[in-house]
Image (cartoon, rainbow, N blue to C red; front, side, top):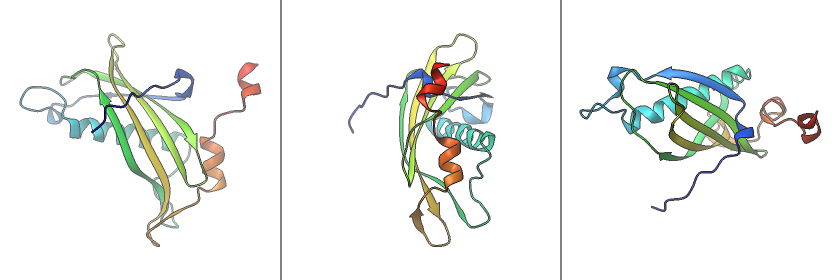
Length: 150
């Protein structure tokens, strides 16, 4: 497997949430397991979408599905450490996009992990990828550049 770099522009991160590592999420070596870190990334994504008013699955059985995860772990984490998850959308297309997530320690700001999640709009009833609704595209789109300059 190739070791690709994950490089994010800090301006992409528009949402923050803090989670504490539970003792049930650590392994025999007293560190956070990879599976538990992946679960925390999913929780951060769900909180981000919720903050934007986006349901994981709506009444029409359509929702956001992650179909690719690229994760780079920089340092190990122990139980009861508080982690800051910063989330943002890098790219958006008509069918999905890429979400960027940066994980740091709350007490010293040291980098724990970087993740890129490719997501698609998925119709669970029809079992196929669909077009993102205009509401989701509007909510997840970054503001125009001229608004950022003022």
